[in-house]
Image 1 (cartoon, rainbow, N blue to C red):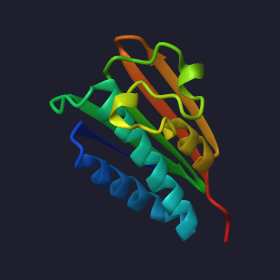
Image 2: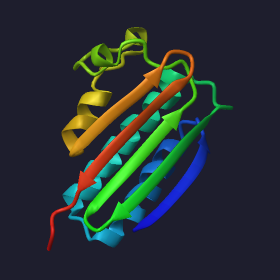
Image 3: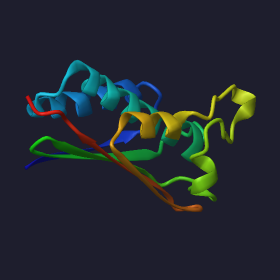
Image 4: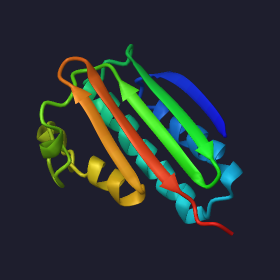
Length: 140
């Protein structure tokens, strides 16, 4: 088993850094290019949700990211301490967005679910949200 964690400010530029770090860490499992792109997309969506929705663009707040890799399975946890999600089931519906005025598509959680094998959203209003994602890589 191997693990790493990091704490990032909720700045837009840090989204690409997070996706690069997480995907690079997962290279140890020898994933396909498609699997790496799946991880990059899921991490991007989860981090963007923290920046745009949890913190509403307040870039002095933190996002915690941790990754564990065991054999062919990665678990990625992205956590914020922002506004939380009042109704997780509703938020996970395609096209649901709390920011329609910003032309948000409401597809973040849908994309995460599409590209990962398992996704759990744990959230409390005014306390934050934790997105737990798992990806199983194909064996050689």
